[in-house]
Length: 96
Picture 1 (cartoon, rainbow, N blue to C red):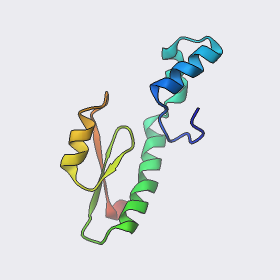
Picture 2: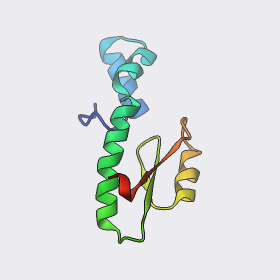
Picture 3: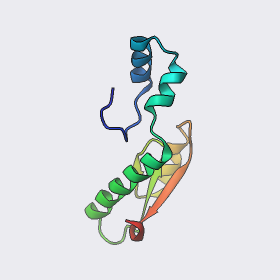
């Protein structure tokens, strides 16, 4: 199981955990998937790192629901289309 609470576990991890405790998978998913407020905090930390590694021309970072960061909005949208939750969140340089 992923030790970092801000990382969403894979389906394989969820199935393994469910088998270990003999709990239905849906019940385990409720426990191991972090809520959106935790994701937002993690995104802000990651955005700060990304902004540091790019010049000032990068004004916004785009995050997909799985926590992947993009500096181009269309790349985030395309990746987001492959996820269950297609939401793309924008974090501006001025917000971090």
